Length: 323
Image (cartoon, rainbow, N blue to C red):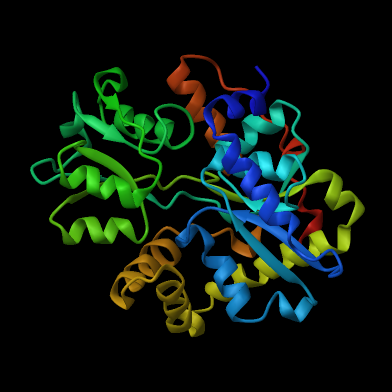
């Protein structure tokens, strides 16, 4: 089944349509306006928040209009259908979409390692304790679900022994942990810190390269507007380099706290994990080949097949980055 026909079967057409209509309201008179589809404010959009705050877009005479999609499949469809020019998406879905012929391309790595952390309710202090339990990582298969199942398998847990529960965002996953709906979850910053404050236990991090979040472009638009595509990519590239400068630490924490409406202390914990410990943001906004290949390797392991060797150039074009 075509990827986007499958998406249409699972995603409200009203959501996709409302995104397209909202995007169409952007003035076409602004030649350097780029519409970018995003999900809800979180650390996934930290680089975008930095580029806005520090004027990296403005320095390039670029106006970025962000349009929030309700979920990742809707975001991908918006970029593929030219309802928007760009998006900050999930790596696993991008691979599937491009394999199905969708006209999108990765131009940089927002997160070349995952910032999802495995958390469990009080009384479970290791991944092995989740055997036979209900857990959530977003969807029930693929992507982040496979990430969690792979980590559990590596810890000696039979993946078929757990029951996956679909809960799209980390905010709702904390609620589900608190009310007993699930016993374990993958949570993104700053929700991992909020969970541990509530007495929940941090169980594991996945530290290998894994493209959680790339910047994607509509290929037709990028081919017709290479300068605008480069400006967007290079503004986020500058933000990626900026955040790794220790001199910018306090300001970076402040930006995340304001953008996500989190306490400063929570944003500090996010910085410590994402920037200093995990080094999750793509250095120089570049995408290591292994970060994409490992998604395929994990999926293949769980599906009991040999992994394909991905042709990276089918998915990633580094030509929009600055030298």
